[in-house]
Structures are given as C-alpha cells and as structure tokens.
Image 1: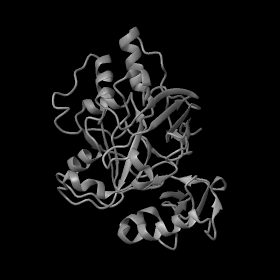
Image 2: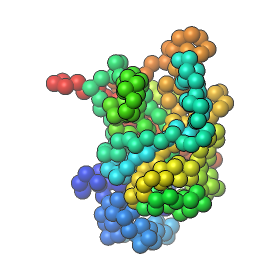
Image 3: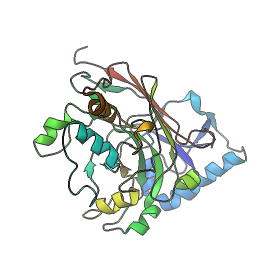
Length: 331
C-alpha cells in the first residue's frame, strides 16, 4: 500500500491512497483526515486504507484524481519525534580519517542516535530555504526512514518489525560548518540540523517485497546533486546496526509514540566506487586522496534528487527533487 499527504487541508495535510504506479490518488478522509490520525488508530485504519488501495487494482475508485495535478507535502509533515542514527561505519570512518580523528572506541557496541527536528518535514519538491549557504556548509544526507506505530518501552528486537508501519525516503539536511562548534560545546545538534525532507510516498513493508527483510531495505538508491550522479548505493549493505537495533536502542528508556520517524544516517557502502550519500563524504575522500577537497557544498540554486529503484527500474517511493534557495533576512 502506498500513501501520500496532499498539501491542503491544514498544516498536517490530507491523507491520500495512491495507486501502485504512483499516477492517481483518492482522498482517504473517510478513514482518517491525516496520516498521523491513521497511525494513532493503525490497527483499524490500516485495513480500511487497504480496501481503498485494493480498489485501484480493479480500477474502481470513485473520485480518483491524477497525482500530477496536486502538490504533495511530506507524508508526515509534523511528527512527534525524529530519531536519526549513524549506522553506516564507512560514512563516519572516511570523514574522521580526513580530519585525522579516530572512530569512537565503542562505535560497534551500541548505535549512535540523536533526536532531530521533526516539525516540519519538507515536502518532496519543496525548496530548502536558508539564510546562508557558503558559510554554513549545506549538505544532503540520503537516507531511508521508518515511520512507526506506538512502540513500548524495552521492546525486543524480534518484535520490532511489527511496529514498522511505513517506509519512506529522507533527505537529512546538515549544515556541516555549524556542526563542529556546536558539538564542541558538548550539548549536541540544534543549529547544525535544519528541516529535513521526505519522499512523496510512504509505503507499507509488504509493498517492498523481498527487498525488505524486517530490519533493512535493499535496492538501488540514486543520489544526484547539481544534475550529476553522486552515488548509487544499496541501503541494506554495510550497516553496523539495522533498524531493529535502532528501535531497541531508542526504547531502552522511553516508549515511542505512533508516528515516530527513524533514520539510519547517511548511506555509505564500503566499496567507495559506488559513490557517496552526502557531500561531506565525497569531500573527505578527495582530502584523503588529493590533500584538498574540491567538491562544493550546496549553493543557492543547486538541486538534489534522491530515488530508490526496483530491479525493473520503477520508483519505490517517488523522488525527492528539490533545490536550495537562500533567502536572506530583508531580501
């Protein structure tokens, strides 16, 4: 089942069910007005939404409309929580090697996870709007994210797949030049992480077929920046910790509300020939190889496109396709 949120009806948008090719939709207001409302009563809302989705198979959906005629918000424009990890050791090791720093000694003992900005999530075609570019080091991070049902305190790993309601794309926007001084003060991210973006569609795990094993997603993840291919990565490869590990780690001391978004961090495969999931890693490789980083961070007008493809070339979540726009105060 494929869900989307129409950018109308208020700050949380309007829930819609999308046909398998991603070309038509029908509003799902009779089931739930928003995705968050559906997640709050997922045990009853999911079967009702599936009834709408199955009607598309018979081409019998009264009120269905072309998707290209509407603007989509993020599937979950405002989430109660966003927890993001760093589950790909190659990402961190390359960046740290470039600046002469070692990996954390306990990196493989427990996941790294922080709580990020969850209100708002930008829509798939919404500009990243910031007051600075060159002095902030604006970067993308290509990720896959889960949206959970309510998860109890102290959940076991074998229980975690049952709490994965939906899977979607994520661009975790990072302001690389603001992060080091923030972390140096010992209190974590705030300014270094601006609003992130979600893909057009959030899909139920069964929609992913054999690519989803309950804990990780395999596939071709294409990352384009400024119209050039930055990476062609497999998000299921080379994870030190999978999504089950991240959920278990998060619920050690807290329960998770329905609609919690969980990311695994910027994609990075050990084989560097497949490219990068962020500009910081590409720059780190240049620094190690050539002694200088030449790839620029995002500047105003630069574009980012993220997409996961099935083996037949069709898109799993639709594409994040957005641009950075600098809007300085008073301009």
